[in-house]
Image (cartoon, rainbow, N blue to C red; front, side, top):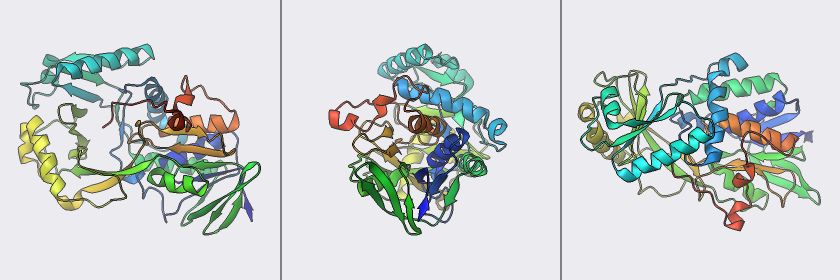
Length: 386
């Protein structure tokens, strides 16, 4: 039987970050279990790659305040590029309620130390991006340190360094059970045999609830399909553009290569492990695209290049981080609700801190992300979800 100090289930960017932070803190006997033949075949490799600090709740803002500087200094730290491009996020408000919401968020962000965010007038939005339809724009918000990363590159850099520091990555390995005794976690059963351990981290992404069930834990994390549409090369909109979010519809887009990457969360989408792309989505998203950017009426797209991935949703759109008090040694890093890539650095640090020290200073109050909030009915709703 193999033994490990800590077993991490899931080799995506979250599991990779946890492995990196644990080994950086001196924990060498870490095993990461990945059921696929290669990393990044789950949500990580299908992510839009956005990173932002423009959130509504303090804990998400603070997680971004750790994660974005980490991505900025990624190559210096790890000798590997993260692909971080600080082109910003621009939220475009078309209703006074939207503007009031952005103002309240801005005040919260500023109070927590975010210096690069600002409320912007409609005139500034129009001056910056005159290609937008502007007759209904009232104003918005912008943060210059928000931007995009390359999720696959960042994941690879984190895992490569973790392995250099002593971690082991088991690919093509499926978890089939979790072992418990009177003291809590005692091991994990896999397709490659048992591993004795007193600490397991569930970082299984959209499959987190299935892993938790092996441990007798009911985890309210559901998979929800998100579809992305890349355009062909297009020169009628600036490629220096930030991520633009049309708050009237939720449609958002960012530059990608010589074209643009389009996203919109279809309200008719229902939970489930649907990972195929539906061509009917293209007409829907292009309608929203042309409504905000008239030039996108002629935006060329190839349905064969579009893809779908899975968000891992919780009832309050916040992650579930930390120990399960009823099962000593079982830790959760799940339910990021579309923010897994952007918060992977903070998650790795927080989970590592909680395992090794029992506390963390990355956020003021990590207990608000605890598993027990669901039983207590103490949900913390994040409303700035894309």
